Image (cartoon, rainbow over all chains, first blue to last red; front, side, top):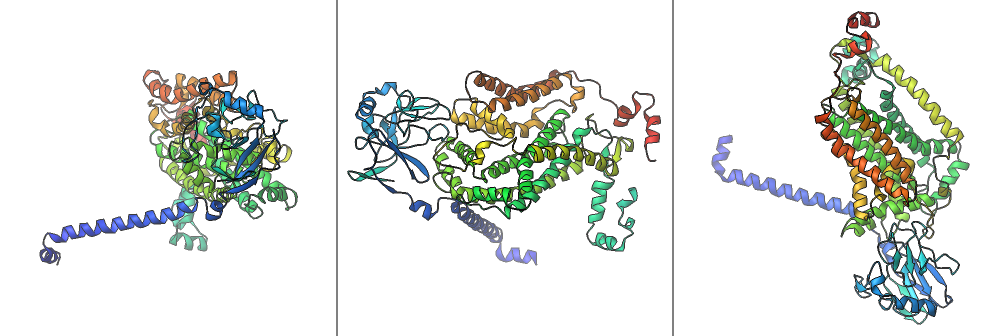
Length: 195
Length: 422
């Protein structure tokens, strides 16, 4: 019987079986990957989490010299009404004095712009930053005028002593990067939409 | 006892009926009754049984805690408080569980150091050792996940710092971290999945423990002399000799465990964790539980984020490589004068790293951490391979029974006779 089958199909029997093995195996692999991806992707941010991806903030009540903290995507966002002195200080810093000379491009979000105060602030006097220390994720102090804002007058991280200036640029380690600028746009003179 | 090897030894008809169809009773008798075990174990050989006891303790207390706990970012902290104050015996179950992790790690660290000292990782026990390393890795993951659940300040910020390690991975780091969080920061989705995984992992640990014990029962136990048993004189049946010895060790261990649970239940914890987790306020200092401090110190000993994370992972990975890094044919450090010193230096080094991990990386602690990290890796990557070539080992005894019973060459067999239940 075995011989007869072989005779009936000639050499083809072997290649056909190989093809079937391969095809079935490949389909099985694709199916497994599909099932695995379903489970893996279920752990990514859900639609309702993503729906919270923009917030509107009213800037009118924030007095000069004050900062507020608001939550965006579960992260603290610092919004600071800078004084004229703080702004001129931030603008007068030379790029060569910075530990991290780059900042986000407001259009693409890619860090490829020189970290001048003009590039980090869309509209004076509002400084808007993600308030997470770039070292290990602590929340820096400095929104209240009574906080210890460090040597450069911006923010100081209580965990490992990183210091940021009035443009949120790191001036003293161990933090490696400037405080990130989130995507935002002004919807009116006193209202901003973050995200 | 020796008769129990055959099913017909069971006189009880019910036991015999079951055993003829599924030989569980024969198996128990073979593996835990008559199982030939080296007669020269010291008390360090208690710690495997103690670790198994702690695993069962953690699973049992954990299941009952889960009946009262709420894995929701808004409710978790209050539900833990309720367990402590309102649930009948909740304070006891929770304290047993919270301190149980410390006791579990303590026991496992002694167990690992014992294996390192007596060469238990060497041929033919490499796979047994690897299963042990996997268990240790799973324990670390489980402990970290469990520490997040009370959702106190240290829970929240510990979870934040640890998950931020993954951002050190180039290119995909950010996406992996977002995936782990299920959002853009540690939040409710994170707590939910951490709870699910914290409940799952102990059962995977139990499965690997089964493989660990299975492998142990194939090769047989190592012993303080590091030589294989050669005859019946070298071994004792596991029961009653080691069931008794383990029970005694367990009683002493339970005294210590109970003293901590009843008198200083918060000693090993961080008071900061009695403040509810707040994503807007970072505690002044974030440090892990004591059993992770040496690895935390290694992480912080290099200023580069990626390198720090790699070194920390590498520190655990070294244990996996141990069977192949050690080139010496002699197992027990008793007969390895050089290795003995290197080993005790390594223990001191691990303790020093623990101390470094508890301090802010400033001043002298940075230097100490770097020196201790160099020795940690040097021990595995330089000393272990090279000692095997240079070290002049002491002569090994010819057999276990001669060494422990004879006290010398002359009376080995004669002294053994009365002890043996011939």
